Image 1 (cartoon, rainbow, N blue to C red):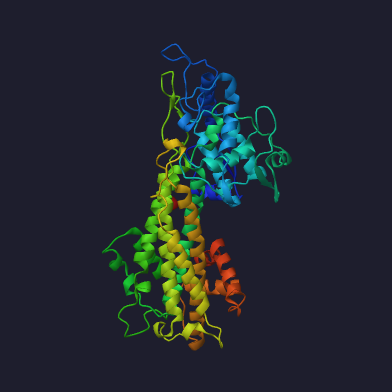
Image 2 (image 1 turned 180 degrees about the horizontal axis):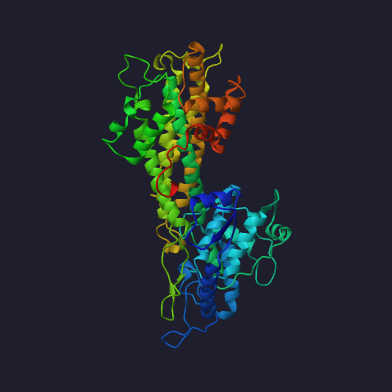
Length: 535
């Protein structure tokens, strides 16, 4: 990947989005993309200036260049008002409310908008992309409210809040907009000045170009997809530790069994579990056990389905990363005077569906994890582990399991598909909207809950394994579970503290940072990646 990425509108990946969003990679506009932008902008400038003449001998009327927007598309804007049109659009559309989006999401949104403009189909100046690249490099982060987008025509309100920071009015500097710079929340004009950046006066169509597209939706979904892969692998580690602590049987994981129903995700999960458990003396150690409960035996089927759903979601998001989402689109290869095409590429449905798939999958990953925690803490289900995994009077893990149940219940409410909802807007011009932004935000919420649920299982499985080791010094742990348990002991500074919240906070941080996964993969080699764009 390197530490510098060129934006060409064609080659962005989920991994690059995550690296830029979290500050590890810089970006700049690719030279070939700059030339495309110059070419299409010249055509827009000619249209705005009345130099392009249609078959009727009159200057061409082009939506969003010399007309109003949305339901006002038939209102012709006089040439002396075009300079105001773009700026007024940005101001009027900055109507977001609610808590601000996290900084990494906003940075990802900025990157995605820059990449979409770099395709050269938006008709705006290269300076817009270059300014976004400079803002990313110097750390200017617009404050973007989290609520107010229906995902069609893209994320209008969130992107307009970005526009307030990038742009100023044609006749005066504006103090509209807020941004973060070097840890301070500042008026946009001050943040940009401190960063040594000059705000632009938006030209013809540029207000529309900066606001038209589902980049907030896609930013959230891309980071969810990236982080979900790490969580899937960590959840497999937790499952293997529970398998071991509960003295499960591995016959259900056999490759020949999985090939009889050959879903790719199930095959990968079963193979990973066998690698993690290799060498364990605890699994297959109960001679009269015929089969395990579903939360163990069906782990390949449930986690495999999670893998396959996230593969679909990642594939959809990867397409969107390099998509033109503007309206109208400027197609310069066509040999005709009017190269502007109004279409619906901004509609958030493809990414909304992907986000809904991801959150349903993550909901089930977490639900399965909680069921294993329940078995670990239930004396008559745990192959004779102490009831509630108590290691002292009143020091059991009853309440962490209750916490997991509460989070699972919350996830089930959040997992209701958002993309099936729709309400008309803009005087019924926008009569079907995607609600994709809500789908993506809720997917992120489900992911964060799932990380905490898996951390709870890791704590329970670790305590179960400590019991097994203390009872029998000859116990051998698996090739992957042994380094996982050692890492958990390092994270906790031993075998844990009396207040579970302290241990859980440390384990959640280790799950999110990938520390536990890294410890296992250092010893065992990489676990199976997800397929598609995430693989």
